[in-house]
Image (cartoon, rainbow, N blue to C red):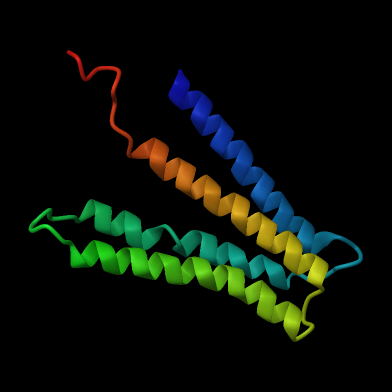
Length: 129
């Protein structure tokens, strides 16, 4: 029951983040759909880490593949924050749209972190059995 509540909270937080990104595009004063490109980063950000967790071989103390996956994931996350700032600097989008997109990025990536912490946590309720 607690897992369902956590997933519903994460779904609500993710929808708030996506709403902020859509508001950055659809408000009449802003009226530019360029900030919606960050959704591509949302799709690609968890992929390297998910693939390396699936194909993890657990050999040795350090895992270079997992470190590469985290490096690629961080590159994608930083790019999703940098793209709206660059578009606002060259006046492709308004700074208000940039701010909405950046706040949406923060909410969506915190949702991703919460999802992965919920998904990969150990079950401590049944560990005494």
